[in-house]
Each structure stands twice: as C-alpha cells, then as structure tokens.
Length: 387
Image 1 (tube, rainbow, N blue to C red):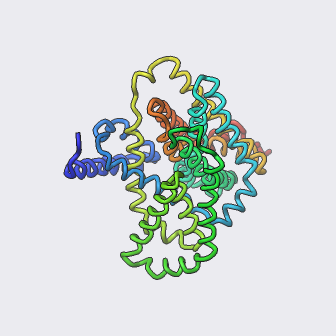
Image 2: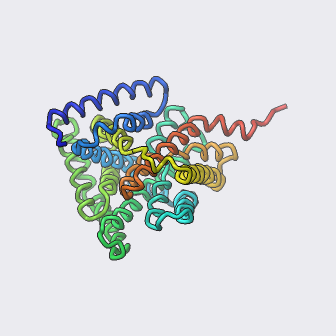
Image 3: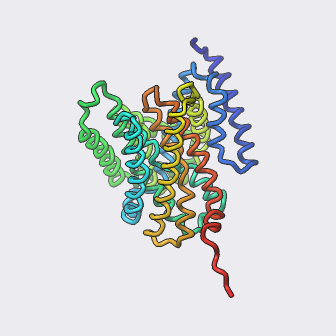
C-alpha cells in the first residue's frame, strides 16, 4: 500500500502529538523520554511501517544526533582527552566489545554477526548518561569527569567502528572488501576536516557571526551538515561519521553553542521520530519466545551490564577515584542507546528483533542503575562514622 501525501502528513502530525504527550509524561515523572519514545514505537509501530518518508526523516535524526555529539569537543580537546582516558577506553573496548563478541560466537552466532553484536553492546548512551547527570545535579561529582571523558572516547571510536562495519556489510562479496581501504577512507575524511579547520576556521567563525541571526543561517548550517553527511555515505562510510566531524569542525570555530541553539528544535523533532521508529522496528515475533533465544538475551544483557560496571569501577580506580565514586561510575554507564540503535540497523533482518529487544532492555536497566547509582554506591560502601 502506497501512502498519499495526506496520509503522510496525518501520520507525521499524529506521531508528533503522541510524542509530545509522552514527552510531557516523561518530564512529569522525571523519566528519560528516549525510553518512552521507543516504547510508543513498539506499541504503534505496525501502523507506520508502510511509510518510507518517515524512515528518511528519522535518518536526519541520526545525522543531527551525531552532529551534536561532535559539537561537544574540538580537535584539541579530543586529543587531550584521548591521552588521559585511553587506558579506561581500552578496558571499555575489551569488556564491552570483545567479550560480547566472543560470547556470541561461542553461543553459535556467525562471526560477522558476533562482531555486529559486539559493536551493538559497545557504547553507552551519551544522550541518556548526560541527561541523567544533569537532571540529578551530578555535574560536580568526582566521577563525572571520567564518565564524560569515556563518553568522548566512545564518541570518537563509535563512528569509526560504524564506518568499518557499514563497509563490511555493504558489499555483495564481503571477502572482497579490504579493511585497509575503509581505514584509508576514514583517515582521508578526518584529514580533510582537519585541514579545513586549520585553513578556514577563522573565516567560518566570521561567517557564522555575520549570518547567525539571519533567517538564512539555518539553511547554511543544515544544508552543509546534510551535504557532508551524504558525502561520507556516498563514499561507503557512515552519514553519522560525517555529521560527527562537521560538529567537531564547528566546535573548532568556537561557535558551537550558538549553532547548537539554532538547530535545537530540528534535532529534537528528528531525534524523537528516530527513537520512535526504532521502537517500531522491534517486532516481538515467535522466534523470540523460545527458551534458547531468551537465555541468549539474558546472557548478553548480563555480560553487558557487568562489562560496563567493571569498566567504570576499574577505570575509576585507575583514574584516581575513590572506591565509592568508582562504583557510582560503574552503575552510571550501563545503559546503551543511540549508537547501538544505529549499528542494529545494519544487522540482517533475522537479527533485527533480537538486537532491538536487547537494546531496549539494557537501556531500561541502565537508566535504573544510573539514576540510583549514588544511593547504590553508598549502600555498598558505607560512610565512615566519625567519633
């Protein structure tokens, strides 16, 4: 069935209003709206599967989401954080990429699907983690610097991982794709953005200042972002990688805050629809109702939760945090979200439902642990009694 433009407008309008209502409920309950958007997608998703235009709109959500991640740090900060956090970052890679990969392979998954599963299990949700830290007024907590540093590390690694996986999965003959070519493409794109930053960042900052308050600014910013994201996609990489690098480029100009505010409404709409449509893609088919699949899901969820906790705890101790702060860090990063969703879209059709359900439950469990992390750490490490 082909949808007419009237049906598309009606669908988009109704979806937006429903997301507004559940967003208000989330604000009232102090519950992250991302999970509610996904849940509404699961409930009402079957009514929108025919509309491909909505799918394309959600892709803009991916682009804007990674663009905002890129705005959070410039190239110099990325290098500085990488120097300080790299040990924690490699602990993170081991526990949350390689361990799930190995476990899935042992459980009988094909090697490429196991790699995909490891990538899905890898990154914590920057959106969920940062939102809870702000909402719970934990910005000044001792563990927050390390948590945000790890988010930055993951935000650098995740787009590269996504680009490599997209390259492997895009070809008809997977064996014919040479990983070195993909790596060279990634290096070329990074180098291009770095050279533009060095050569034109002052001119770009001047241009942004001149047109920031003009109606044309949104056309310039949005058009440039979507164009570069489309360019990286046409190179066989990921649109998310292109968007991430454009964010870093804008950050280099010192105008990230102004640009962020100007595009906030577009991002919130597109991201909300993106999470809604992700939920719509979670189909609870009969294959998920057998004991073996449920056990595999439980195993993957458990090793993912434990892996992130160990990353936060061990990483915190290495970073110089106290035992309690390290435990708080471990509980705060269990959630998965936007990056896992993007990676899951690359999975074969037979695994979409499996990985979708995994992400939903690990995000839900992660939100619970993150919100109560300080209280849980106090229960585990009792405050010292002063005589």
